[in-house]
Length: 148
Image (cartoon, rainbow, N blue to C red; front, side, top):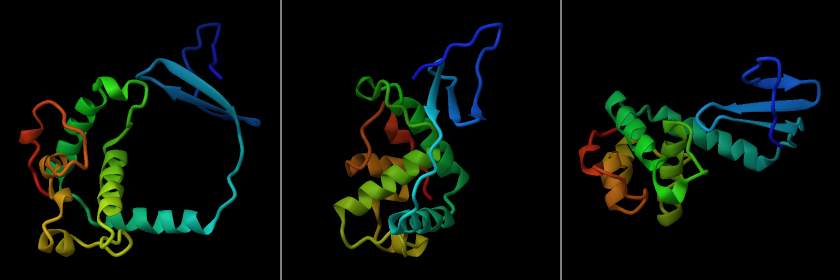
């Protein structure tokens, strides 16, 4: 549910008793939901290990900046209105999962930088990922060619 604040309070973010407030500055929106601690399953551990491995690949600063540039252009696409990706990390993980979904020989739990370069996987750069169809095309994506 949406929240409105009075008395000059612009926004609130965090937990209060059994309620969670989520402030989205870009949309000018504050959402409120009941706090529920999730039940952890084996899938949570697998997802955590996969994410840890993908962060362990340590993309270069140039790659991160290209991903940030791509992200800002991606969020302006008409078909993504209201479904923003909030950080370059989320876009990076989305790219890697899409690549693994399309190629069943890729195991994200054991993927290494050496394997990415040896197999010339399209996640090497944002440009190659767009050209491979892993990410939607955005304006001027051809300049986003810095490698991991």
